[in-house]
Amino acid sequence: MNFTVFLGNLPTWVTADDIKAWLTAENLVADSVKVIRNHETQESKGFAFVEAPTTDEMQAIIRRFDRAPLEDRLLRANPAQPSKGKDSKPATTMERPVQQRNGRKPRRGKDAAPKTAFGAELAKAL
Image 1 (cartoon, helix red, strand yellow):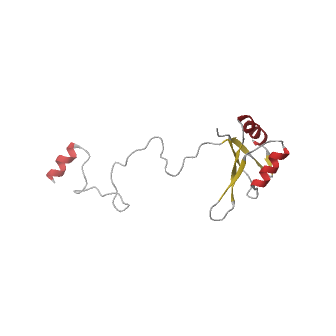
Image 2 (image 1 turned 30 degrees about the vertical axis):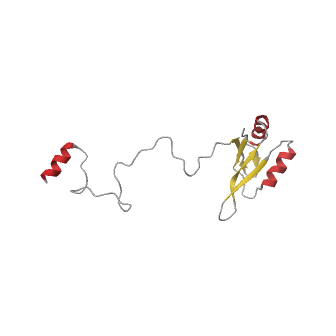
Image 3 (image 1 turned 135 degrees about the vertical axis):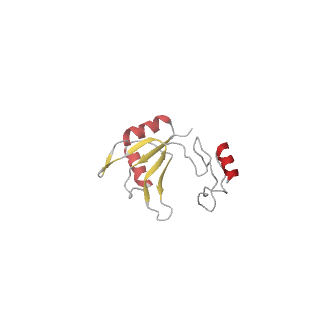
């Protein structure tokens, strides 16, 4: 089972070691802590994931850190949602009704396919 806590609204200076120290001070246990960083600058993005060993421990971490004050902000702590991944698609997708050429919409005119039977007959007449 995955008992991961999303810990958000963190100042950018917070490290995984800081979070581990906070957990230890509160007698809370985590299997791992990962502060999410910008790939280019390595600066914290302001959130982290804390993996708890049990659901009870996860709930205890959430109770302790959700809305806890730190500097001039309130932390957010809640169960982490599964990642959506880069290849995932929304639950419902709509196909584009008209194909695009070279990144531009096709012009309506003689070369564009008519949308209705009336349009098809009109195109023949022109």
